[in-house]
Image 1 (cartoon, rainbow over the protein chains, first blue to last red):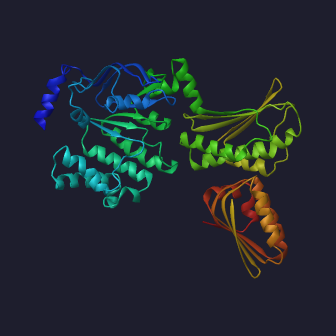
Image 2 (cartoon, chains in turn blue, cyan; image 1 turned 60 degrees about the horizontal axis):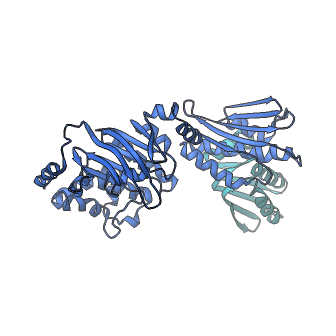
Image 3 (cartoon, rainbow over the protein chains, first blue to last red; image 1 turned 120 degrees about the vertical axis):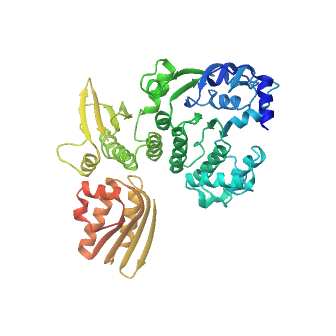
Amino acid sequence: MITEKHEARGACAGENMNTSIISIRHLCKEFLNVTPLKDVSVEIKKGEVISIIGPSGTGKSTLLRCINLLETPTKGEIVVDGVVTTDKKCKVNLVRQKMGMVFQSFNLFAHKTIIENIMMGQVDLLKRNRQEAYDKGMELLRNIGLADKAFSYPDELSGGQKQRAAIARTVAMEPEIILFDEPTSALDPTMVGEVLSVIRGLAGQGMTMMIVTHEMKFARDVSTRIFYMDQGEIYEDGTPEQIFEHPKRERTRIFIRQLKVLHVEKISRDFDFPAFMTRLEEFGRKQQFSQRQIYAMQLVVEEVLMQKLLPAAGEAEERDLSLDVEYSERENLAQMRFSYNGPSFYPFGEEEDLSGRMIKGMSKAMEHKFVDGMNHFIISI
Amino acid sequence: MKITKTQNGNSLYLALEGRLDTNTAPELEASIKGSIDGVEELTINMESLDYLSSAGLRVLLGAQKIMNKQGSMRVTHVNDTIMEIFEVTGFADILTIEKA
């Protein structure tokens, strides 16, 4: 096995002096009707934790799949730890041993127990004996709190547990790089946290990782570097601070702003209140708000809109009512701004009613401004 | 919201599940009004209630007023978030509450 590995390196190497663990040069992937990757060139160093963010359909997953050779690039070169993987003579399986991949849909074998799933690759590819593979598997399962599920079948586990087991299976192969393709997208929101915490643990151990994710707070906390991908290229590459706080380029700025702000306009009496409550909850979860913050946001929307602003608007025509919810990470504050035209109107008048008491009790600050014919009522939670 | 109603002689037991808000409060109000005649003990179990807004509080207050005349009312299995709502609105002093 080891000899083969050397042969593979010899067969298509020539890049051993490179300090990067992955070098990508002018990578292009074209399908019949679409070009998910136009021209990607980037160097990835050992120990970097890179989150790849960006709108859907901009080549994020295709980039990972090309790196792992699940897709054959149309043009360009990929070098992984000195091996030119895009070379036709390159032994794909040997390259894949350096790289683990965790998929959105777990990809565990349903007819094998969790421990068997974790042992398989170790026995077949790393040639470990069954006892060694078992010991390694159990150690990893213990680390992530799943030792008691070792002899369960995947179908007996929750989504979060399955994904944690899939990560343990990848780690058991002792890869140098782990690629995560939207590891939490298929999970119920309540299970996202347990999976992210396992990935966070790996990042803390110095593993080189590339993570395609929509979990922005996680990306920000755990990564050393962020790729913002848009229209088939790495449109902006920087530290989490640069990308999330001071994005330089236009499309990055728009994307980042949309993440932080929930904007609804033209709110009328026909407003779909239950659907909006669900949207608020999703927005809050994405920002990793506490359950209480989410509750308080929903309460503010219900009390201010349903009890005050919409009834007060009556039959008035030309009512212009909008809401922006914005999260300030620095202050851990959700700010809700109701903007509405008409005469100056403070929803909670002198006499404090039930809605007013609730909102005051659940919020940190309230402010009402009337500027140029527009009311701005701002509540901080 | 799901309301499970159990009537036993002059005791009425309501278990609430989900969200008690502007949309669902009329449902609870109708349910209470339809069964409260002659009830001396009203118990409202909030174990599976996730959310409560002022519209829900008004229904609870209405029920409390009726029960003040004909018996007693208890609100049970109240979680921390809903307890906070009862506290900031002063309802903690009006209702008989048993925490979860």
